[in-house]
Amino acid sequence: MLKPVLTFAAVGIVGIVLFKLAAAFLLPLVFLALKIGLIAALIMVAFWFFNKKERGKEDTPPPSA
Image (cartoon, rainbow, N blue to C red; front, top):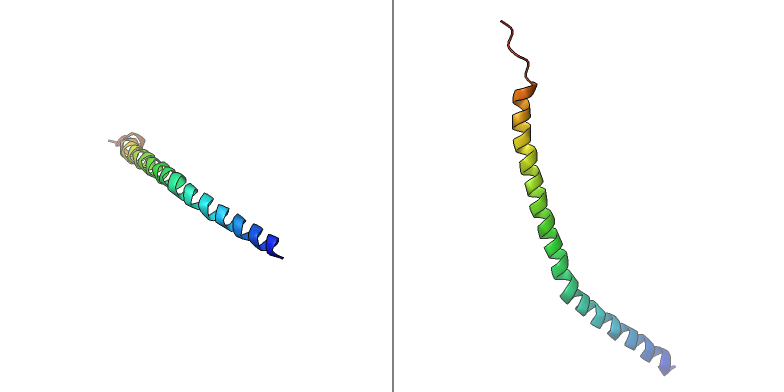
């Protein structure tokens, strides 16, 4: 009766330790990836916005006299 309880407790302790290690090492990497993605997205939006303004001038037909 005692062996299954001890096994369950050991698995729980190992799980908590692995979760703490993953949180300590992987969470900063996730936030770094999110920051890089946000910066890339802002650069892409800036390119899209400024290229959209230039395109509007080319697409207008010449004025008819």
